[in-house]
Length: 212
Ligand SMILES: Cc1ncc(COP(=O)(O)OP(=O)(O)O)c(N)n1
Ligand SMILES: Cc1nc(C(=O)O)sc1CCOP(=O)(O)O
Ligand SMILES: [Mg+2]
Image (cartoon, rainbow, N blue to C red; front, side):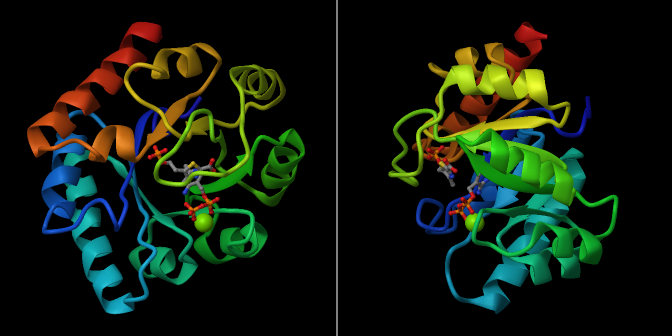
């Protein structure tokens, strides 16, 4: 199993990380041990997105972490970093062809093992299931269960991400059910200070260390 695709997977949120918080909060998450960072910006400002993604790339390089861009293949291609695609975000095969064999490309599979089969066949580097718990960031996505995670673990050798409403409190059961990575927005970046973001990131990181 890939060492690169393991551990805390921090996801930024353009609504949550306002007022100059993006870089210090991400710095704190990486200092606390986050191994993967996804830049998830739903705004329509390509120049700002490029600027922010460049700065995040620098931070990830400093900490030896992996940067993934959400939804935006041209931006991932321009920076030479990874990409995460949802069900309606474009063709994974085309993204793989454009980014090359070494690029990290993740795929949303919700609670459906058939989606995961398709993603694997199309060349996904990891498969993501969720949401496992109530999510303030993205309510209303299909519900997944730890049992589904166990079934996915049996069936796939690809790294598995769990996402949706994950906190330090409910994380252990998902690691126990086979998640290689926990993708977290609010349970990490919803913290009131950068110091608290780092404390939470350390907490998630220690969960992985104590489980394996
Ligand atoms: C690691 C990870 N898993 C799932 C998602 C959700 O992707 P998607 O369904 O395309 O939703 P948006 O994030 O684009 O709103 C994700 N981003 N990351
Ligand atoms: C972006 C996203 N995708 C989901 C899915 O189920 O596919 S849940 C989700 C939001 C994750 O944020 P939080 O950790 O704040 O719940
Ligand atoms: Mg998407």
